[in-house]
Amino acid sequence: MNIIHTKAIMDLYQLRTFFTLAKIKNFTQTAQALFVTQSAVSHAIKKLEDSVDTPLIERKGRRLTLTQAGQTLYRSCEKIFYEIEKADRQISHFKNKRY
Image 1 (cartoon, one colour):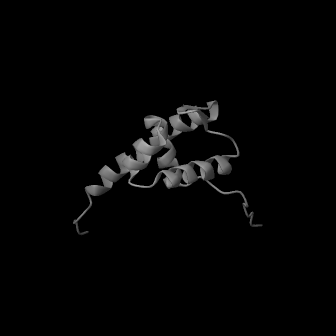
Image 2 (cartoon, rainbow, N blue to C red):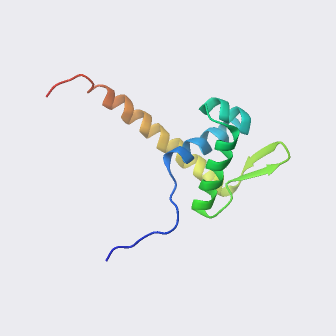
């Protein structure tokens, strides 16, 4: 029996955008760091919040803070992106090698 999930899932772009925003705490500067528009950052965060069905960021005027769920996801992102970077370094050793 196949189970079809109708709920959106988190994707790597959304996670990278969230992780960068959580570190920088500014939408405009996050957009600049990722070479995208501020609108693209906002849309990625909105899609991510929709996919987990909970707010990750609280906006109070110009101030941005992480919710408890956001803090939890941030800690997971630290691990995820560390492992991705580690795998990338390890895989790079195989470039141009013939087996």
